[in-house]
Structures are given as structure tokens and as C-alpha cells.
Image (cartoon, rainbow, N blue to C red; front, side):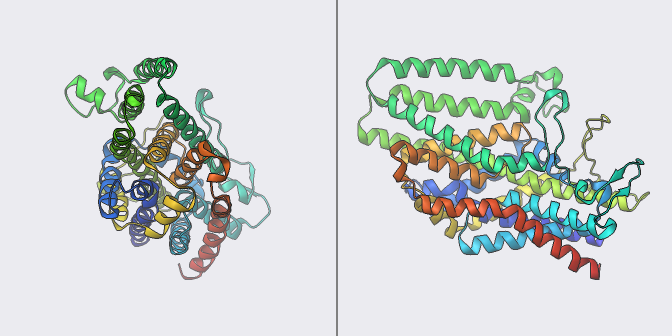
Length: 443
């Protein structure tokens, strides 16, 4: 039990570090454009990081918890993974490199699990409880087909989104920038497009809504408020609110002078940064929830018959067996509080890289980048994919830079960032493996 408590504490420390390491994701553009002072920006971002507690479910947490097969690992594996993730995060923060906290956690967890499998079974095959032959690399959940044709999961999908997340962010921000640029012209066609997009958005969100009868645990007795505040529905309401707000601005953009347009864009940046901070909090806090849930599951597996107190009564969902997940309320509350506190601490070295070194950012670019980043995070969270908020917002900033010209993006800085992204998972995995072997000597 002592080791389990240590893991939970270290996981929350990692969550805090994640907050100040990734604070730049949400505040870099509003600081660079002087919409908010650095202190105001971190308070703003931290508030919406915490507010995500009431917005998002636990889909990403479930994906992270199942990075490795919990029936085949021990608590030392999770401890080594968390320690390695903390070390890599602190190193990249010190060097001012906006690497992915998400990927270092996944890499650390997977690397320690593989080290454990090699230590216990070696490189040769072994017969598992199901009577079939298994190998050391199968301890990691590399790929699992989606249920009923849904989105597949596994480490390979997470690795794929190292490329896909920034590309989606870049594409979305590029398209939003083109939309805004055309809306500034006195032509009827951009307005027709905007009205059509508004209608399509309202229709799409209406289709996605979960009715009261299908809500498993209504938050209120009122049908209206239960539907409005269901985590699944809130996300789509937010998507609609973001798109409709930008659309309303686009309808008025051509009638505004330069000063009025700049003032309106700065106000919209508050909305876009808030939306991205919500996505950041919801996406990244869930990863720590997943690690804590996996640690409790492993403790129960390695101590059969143990009676768990209600505050640690965690059950991982299993769609194949029809088991619903259970997570005590203090775990998500603690995780969201930790990441919000970390964001309050700021991460000024990375803010400088994100806010000025990739491309010059104005209020126009800030709105496009943050809006694109927020929408990307909401959609990937809906698909239960733990993507990197760092990669997403970096891609979004690159996307708005490309609308000016290709040379507007400082590709030397960008290539360095990409190298950090590519190396994060393997380095974290190797480091976690070494930490596991060291810890195994003493524990």
C-alpha cells in the first residue's frame, strides 16, 4: 500500500509539472499579442484547466491505463514510468523545449513494462495463463481494433498522432485563417459560406446530443440541465459556441475598420485561449487519472483478496466483458487541481519559444491557432486518443504562419521541435527501463 500511495503522489507531482511545462500551450499567443499580461494569462489558463473537470469524461484516462496489460505488470513498472516521465519533463522544461508530456508518460509506462517482461521472461516465448505462447513485447497494448468499427486504440495509434495531431492543427488553423481573411473582404460569398457553416454546425451538434433517456448518471433532477451539463453534450455545445462566435465575427468583419477589427480579435483571443485551456486540462489531466487507475488495478491484481477502501475503489472498464469503469471523485478532482496549480506557476522558457520563435503572432493568428487547437483537442478527446497539446498548438501556429508565406515559419526552430517530438517516446521508454532495473534491485 505504501508503494501505491507513493505512485499516486508522484503522479500528481507529474501532473503539476505537466501544468507549468505545458502552460505555454494555452498562454503563449495571448502573451505574445499582449492581450493579457503573463500573470493574467496563467490565472486565466489555470481557471479553465480546472473547469475542464466538469466538461470531460474519462475516455482518454481509460486509453492510458491500458497502455500495458495490467495483469502482467507490478507497481515498480508504474513507479519507474512516472519517475522517467518526471525526469524528461524537467529536462525539456529546463532547455525550453516544448516536448509532449503525454508522450513521455506513455513512453515511460511502455518502456518500464517491456523491461519488466524481459526481466521476468527473457527474450524467449513463454506460455501464459490462456495456454498460448507470448513474447516480451506483447506486454504493451500496441494495437486494438475499435469496437463495432469504431476508432482503434493502442500505442501505435498514439504514435501515429505524433504526426497527425500537428497536421490536423495546422490544417484547421490554415483553413480558419483563409476563412477570416476572405471574411474581411466586402463580398457576399464569404457571408453565404459563413451562414451555411453556421447552419451545418447547429445541425451536426444537434445530431450528436445525447438525450436524457440515454444518460447513465444524470447530474441534475432537471432533464434540461442534465442534458446541458452531460460531459458528452458539453463538448459539442462548446464546439458549436466556438464556431458560431467566429462565424458571427466573420459576418461583421468587412464592416469594421482596422482598429475595431483588432479590438474584436483581442476579445476573441480570450475565448479561443479559454477553449484551448479547457481542452488542455481535459486531455492532459486524464492521462494522470489513467496512471493512477492502472496503479490501483495492478495493486489489486498483485494482492488477490485485498479489501480496498472506498477512496481507492477503482475499476477499469472492459467493453468485452460489459464492465463499467469506476473512479472515485477525488482522483479527477486532484488531477485537475494539480494541473491548474502547475499552470499558475507558468513555464516562461517555453512561452518564449511558442509565442515568438516559431512565427510572429498577432491577434489574428492567435485566434486562428487557438481555435484550431481547441477544436482538434475536442475531437481527439471524443475519440479517446491521448494526443499532445504541445504538438497540436505548435502545428496550429505553423498553419497560420503558412497563410502569410512559407518563409514566415522559422523552420530551423520547427525542425528542432520535431526532433524532440520524435525522440520523446523512445528516450522516455529507455530511461524508464533503466529506472525499472535500478528500482528492482531495492524493491
